[in-house]
Length: 281
Image (cartoon, rainbow, N blue to C red; front, side):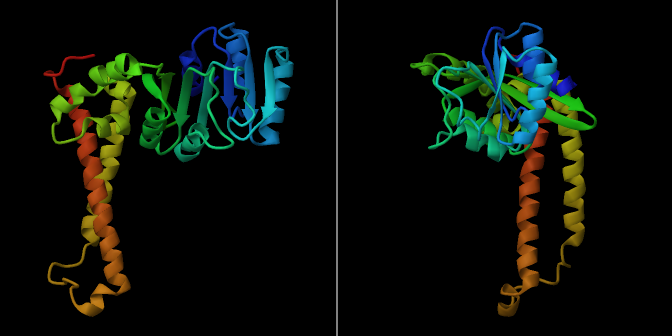
């Protein structure tokens, strides 16, 4: 078990039945069953190859009676009362959102009350998606392994009348504080970008990642500044407006603005670490 997989396994609520979507080798359900953290699991994958490897490992560990393997596109083959926790890790955020958002073939079964997610990209989109499907982030962790950073989150289903519990508690503990420090930046955008619980914890791994991202962003901004045309070359003639060079310049300008906004968000998150005026959650 790698540090990333161990951190994901630790997020699963003891006693829950697990569905591991995109199970790869099946290491997490095997570990959780071996340690009796969970009673049973379903290891699922869209490809037969990874599923066969998981099946072999499960049989080697003598856990075939507790861990099923199932060929499935996302949650398509998961029954309505077979799992309490869905784990999805190691895939892109857009694909993860496609799996989570209700469609004809993919839906979250009624019995599932917990999501453990570790997206590789588009992480802000995943955090927004969690809200859209009626879940709420209640815990987060971040692991650095072999020079790469892995944010992960645990979300719980908001029950009927949820305005009185998880969502309100999350906003009160994790978002209002952010707004108090940086009123010019929407609290929800900051929370989605970097994680409401990671920020409220002042997570040290997140801080290292933010510092690395700030350094990289500054380098790219400097390169874009150096690539800008001379001030005297305005490129405002009718011919220039339709030229490939003008189009490239517009794209560079748009990219420059995106990076400036990213830098502003990172700076806000980093200063939040050091701001003693904010009461810690």
